[in-house]
Length: 173
Ligand code: AMP
Image (tube, rainbow, N blue to C red):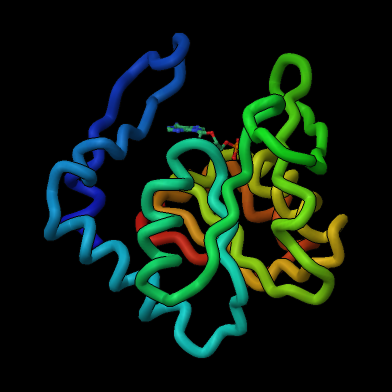
């Protein structure tokens, strides 16, 4: 996993002072690393019941959709408020300052569907927890979570275990 970790660009003070931003765009420029990431996820997910992959806007779409294709699964885009064109269901969640809302199409998850939530990075877990709540609200089951990077010092896992304790991350920092 060092190959993946070493390819992630660290950008200090983005988008604001004090944040060390983990920029995954160099991973997209390297076909070998991209394929390694998809293979690693697919290997670790073998044997789990997953009926669909839900990717969180926008960086969760990148490896999320590629993985869905690799695993032969439907992909569900979870987007910020007002972006999806058809009928939506949404969840509001707290940010450091104020609130945000994520949405998906109302027919994306059907009752009893086992859905994996995917994003590029797990920080506090607020976004992934909101996605999980959205899926459960439609009668879906959160089978697991997957992230390329986990910032373990922020303890984002604690916000997710009520939905699923099965949390996969490739790079742990
Ligand atoms: P959170 O809800 O706190 O777990 O934040 C997760 C979301 O914010 C993900 O969609 C990440 O892409 C983004 N994010 C949070 N912190 C960082 C960081 N240090 N570097 C890159 N992306 C981040």
